[in-house]
View 1 (tube, protein in one colour):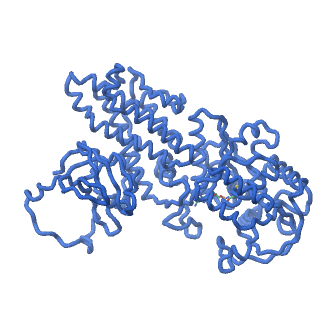
View 2 (view 1 turned 90 degrees about the vertical axis):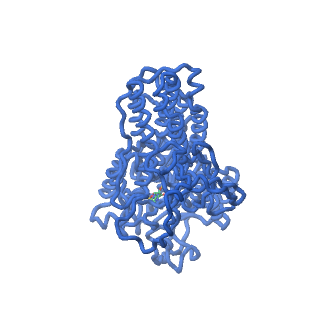
Length: 638
Ligand code: MSP
């Protein structure tokens, strides 16, 4: 099956930053995921190089538009390999082949009678390169640029977009996932409830020459959006290229919410008018903000992808972007949040699991993967096999639906299960007796299988780490180890494989700012509550404090603050904790917490809580107290 994925083609009036990197990394991740399913993938990115904006940026630099676009376009093209992003093609709207397709499509729509000439007077924003209606302005200003638009009167060519309004509404209604997630579909349908005007698609050369000349009037150039959107078909060799025939029927676009209207409205109407079938899906994501605000050059908070890569490592950066942002919603970027995820999800959950299992294989079997009889494997395999199938199914569903954060959460849930399986099976105990040797072999074998699966599933997001894990599992990192149908077979690492010495996948990052749980060095905070009366040690001993692992977490319906947790505390228990405003259920699964185990059960919103979580009562919200290292669940605190 073919799969075709595109990013927006980026304007060359600014250097690439975090936002561009995110969209393009997402496209790379889904491309790699579809390669895992042995599909034929075509991944397109590139640069949008015509229009006023670019001319003005070039002038500011004292360069000709041609020299300027060459320079900035190269910055984008050169960035992608550094981020391990591998597009199949990099298109530029100044490519001759693209310009020829734009002319051809314009002529076709013109001949069909859907382009007409008319005089127009309107309010024009130069920043947006488009006319605004009075209603769209905020206090008479452009909502994006906060500048007053200028009144311009000129004759121009118009595309009869209004003719396609009803068709588009019908199409979106008949294909509920044409635009996803749903909030953006609803947004487009809301636009379409108002009458859809026609689209001005030309600019007189008296005002702008840096564009594609209209094939039917050489006094005009093409409006940038009409030019740019066509890149998605020109790159495939429209109209008769083999690639066009193969990939266009499988087309999916990725954009952020800022360019929803051109992609959700103009583009389908253009395709319909040109007699080209419409794309399959438009996948729309939210915006990355920095310090809760917009990223902007003037504020000086623009995040440079290469700098992040150099400081934290490429895979950690890619992981953070994909795990942190709920696809479709805005997210806040901060280095502190990145470090937090790196330390907890990567260094702690994945890194520790990996080095524990590999080093135990060295310790108990001299680094050789043990042979296991199938019956022993079934009996002592820790139940990881069915878990693995469930994980793969969830992962695949989420990846397919562009819920990339969920796909990773599913993998981390599995990692949590594996960590717990290590704690529960306690190989160090099994290694003490001859009678449990067979069991130890089965346990270790199953854990190695789990690591192998994880290395495959993280491949789209962290290709380098995936290959390193493969190598350290004694497997060939160059063989396509990530083929999903293969992973489903839940194969063992072959018995007798010699594992290289254990490796640390992700070193923890120590920060200058106090890590969670480290007390600030300064004097006691003025907000510290008054001390309670002294107690003796026997009073303290009455409190049964235990370490527990969170197995499952979910919100309590209709209770804003409450999460219901299933925990493993040596035994299984249910807790209700008032932390839902500060911790998501997914972020807790697999984590260890401290529990007051002998508190009288209490009923909260109909759920019986058999204990209480320990948290610091910060005014900004509760902060959970967590053990420094993974501990056997049920261990008492002293
Ligand atoms: N040239 C047009 C697109 C034409 S496509 C036929 C354009 N270019 S752009 O350089 O402004 O890129 C916009 C895109 O960059 C967004 O849709 C998004 O993919 C990405 N991002 C830019 N800033 C972003 C954030 N702060 N956050 C997330 N992505 C954002 O529009």
